[in-house]
Length: 280
Figure 1 (cartoon, helix red, strand yellow):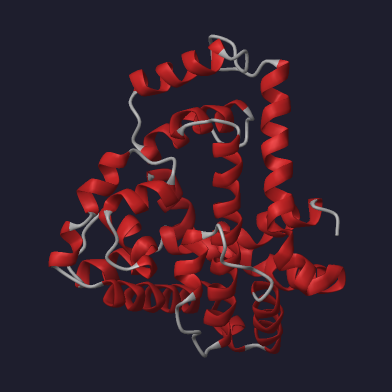
Figure 2: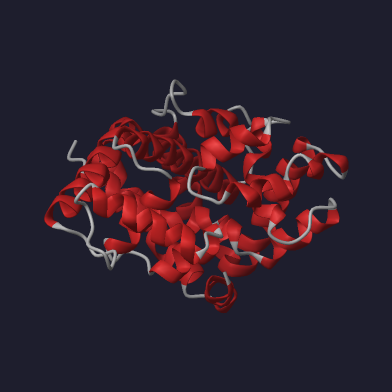
């Protein structure tokens, strides 16, 4: 299968999975378990790994300032449990999707999309994919809109694990990876730097390290070699994500994209979602 399909699938399906990180329902559910504010992201997403050392979360999340993670963990486990946070996350996405998508969650189209996504997720494998592996051990929900979300979450973490492997193989550290992301034009520097909590000095040092390798100019813009490196990373990430989509086949991939596209659009253009994005 053409690896470009993996990139197209990711772009179309990401809002359906990623909305969990912006829902007010999520903040409410985590706070009810004693985890407040930004800590909720790190605690809820890593909860399927269990009570692991914070360094495990730093490794699997890769590009966040480690101080964010050591602020959240392990102290969160004095207030709650990994199992309770997994439950809170599912509760939040259930409430959020019901609010954002209305009657669509009980439609035949949703049932079909859930079936297709679960088939795709069965193509993922655990070796070398630690964050995916933790999520893959969770029980499957029963409602179709949650089956779809869980399947897409598995595929998203599978892809992310592969992407980190590509970054490490290219000898990029957390900040350097973000600098190359910003240089690609996909996401503005301010969004990447602030959400990952790196200082201006951290960023400047990352630019300097990349410049010494001939990958960026002093202003952080790519050199020709930098463009080549970033494209190589993206292409290899797509290659490593293909097992899920090979399991579904090209026709199944096209059908799933067509089914999920209107829901992803509704999610990504909703007031709650866009307001949360502006605030992060």
